[in-house]
Length: 287
Image 1 (cartoon, rainbow, N blue to C red):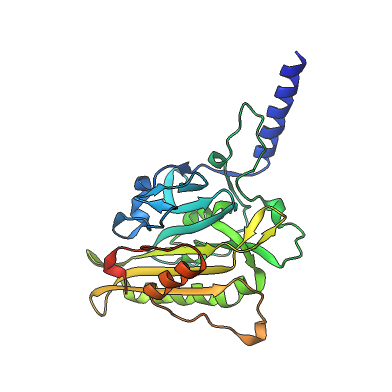
Image 2 (cartoon, one colour; image 1 turned 45 degrees about the horizontal axis):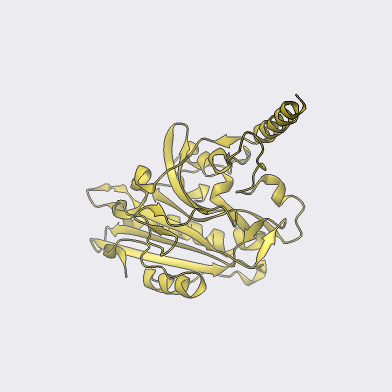
């Protein structure tokens, strides 16, 4: 009787903790279930991490991010570091949406409780990890809300499985300027090859693990990167572009700009800083 009572108390405690956060009802499934977010329906090939849309290590979870009954984007999530490796999405337009502040969601399927005996949020970050930190980091989007086509898509990006601890001055400085620059570039030059009246680009944004942790739990990335692939309406050919920068404090007065790079340069950079990246996009966009 005592054992049952204790177990019920633990279950109740776990449920209360879970209820304290809004949950996004996404699905931890193979990326083949949401392949539309990847160029040519093919997710990146990262040896030992992700191949053929399947995780190659149990620490990495493939998430089809669902919000209001529809898939909105895809995320490869590292449960050991408690941060996403990358998020993949389609850029189809950018609506003028005021910054949303409706709270941050968590992913329930990442938390596997054994009859209520598990430790809540053992596999992902929570809001409290960011409270009162002295490392000058905040929640940095991978799929940024400013690249969203409407308010519902923008709301879907506010999940902690789509964020990494990012230096606040970097987030509001050079990284933000890059997000705006790419939004304008993709909106002007990227079209759907089958219907050139429509805007379309496939985007990957990710982070390279660092050596420091937030709240002794959540990995603080050393670098962040972004690349997009699209059909160019001027050259009538497939093009790609890439960016990366260190996740470091910035001086606003320096007005730092992140340099444009090629996709091949990004893949070579990631090979030296993380693991050998075989392919981020299909060969059509490898330039």
